[in-house]
Image (tube, rainbow, N blue to C red):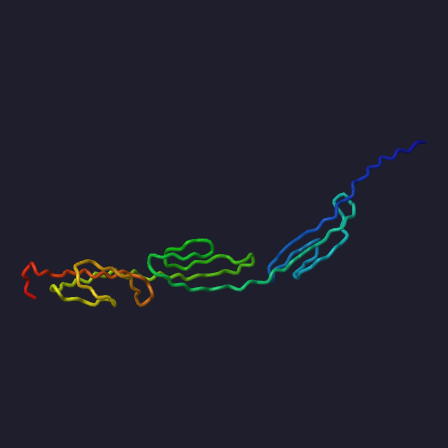
Length: 171
């Protein structure tokens, strides 16, 4: 009597490390066990072909992030950069801070434009006017940059006409 043995040698199973991140309050099931805390655990598992191998769970529980809120006010005609974007409109903007749902919110307000001002003045020859800390006695346009009550820039221009002696103008 002869007996034949068909022997199949299965390859060694590779040990595995399973890395997971979950948010605080979350859970994961791994090899039939539920985990909710940061864990580093190695078990002996059996593969589909019946061979044993070591499996390691490397679980990190991320803390729940806190939401953040910002307010920013800028002058008309300027921009504000936030989260890599250049913002040019009054609005409320949000973006995700982390994978656990924490968000940052920005309320951006753009102030209305302060209109430029032109002040027209006429003087007789020989007269002068003090305007914004300077004295003027010649015909011309004299612009200065000023700040409004919000600290935003605008231009004020003195448009000065000085009447000459040659016009026989009576002042």
